[in-house]
Length: 522
View 1 (cartoon, rainbow, N blue to C red):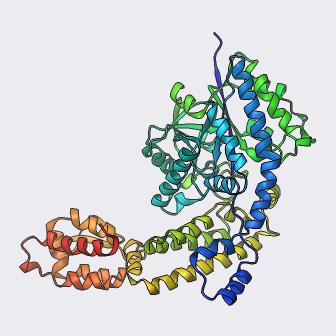
View 2 (cartoon, rainbow, N blue to C red):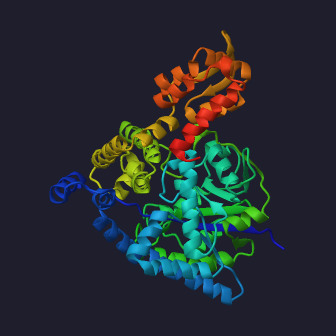
């Protein structure tokens, strides 16, 4: 029996919600007509749903439905002939939202694919966001939202996963491992692989989850070079491409591309849909090639090595750099993202799901992608996808909307003092103002608090000697009032006298727990 090589064909399917260019004017007009606007009115003002629907319906007609039809036909054809053609999809939650609103026939089309049993659906962040850089809680929430949506629509919980745009590092891998996924997909970047090939299964560092790495050269032969007449391999045929796959060494070849490649980026007139139609048959002619899903590969192929991607060396599949510079790096991107991050904590403190949805729609990674000022080939790609005339225009429109949302959050705090205190509890104090626990003068411990929640955890485990030392000096109350801003809690802790407390730790924790219940309910 010949050596079997697995071909994993994976499609990224995503459409963002684009911002309304006239958001400020629409806000002004709406206020003049209706007076004060409710949160429920804002999504239709912040986002250009007329444009979003127009783009979505065009792509559905030119790409999604025709490509789904081709793939379903090929799956059924080879199933009838005793062979298996398999594919995998990663669809963002906002893509699925738009499908249900504007093209329910597309959802039905994907359900037909799911019913074949030969299609795997991956998880990703629901809002196709950079939420892993905001907070682990938000990142996990968006992954779980996506997982529940896939289950509701297609009747299955995904066992494979990717972060937005194949963004990956060890931290991301550990979170996915903890959430129970079997395999994560990312980019086969040379600076990570070094002498190794992307065409093997790897294990994530510090976790048991498997890692599949995209063969970007073979992927980009379809995704970027298919219709390029200057290319020495033009025209690319399914027969030629299958021969390349057969000749490529390794256990598994991950070919991952934007689904819009088929009919949108390359019109049907280029032959791209016919290439997709003929590819399964040409691949299956080779005895050493087999189509597999990511989970099947993770379960059947042993890892060859461990992949180590430190957080400072995060990778992605975007641009030549294959890092985070497609979304973060210039002043506009960094400034807008930092404001978005800070706003998340404020909205979480308000506990308003409507405001949180608006924030999440602003977390869609495409907003920052449009602000890129790169030149050359990457710059051309950014410009192709952007609905704006320039990255500066994208930045201004984004800040228009973000500033309005920030202002509404500030007004909400005025009306809800408890929310302001919740925010004070959750936010990190300024660098240098963290509370360091000491045993006595000149005897620091390694226990440090940077917000009230970490302060509670610190009090729970700090030595009794340290707790008594600080309470005698009223250090806890001083820090809570001056660095955190929690005057209510500071006043209550000040009333606890060490000499009168049988169990000082219990007395302090009792005050802390009571205040936490007041603000958070637990």
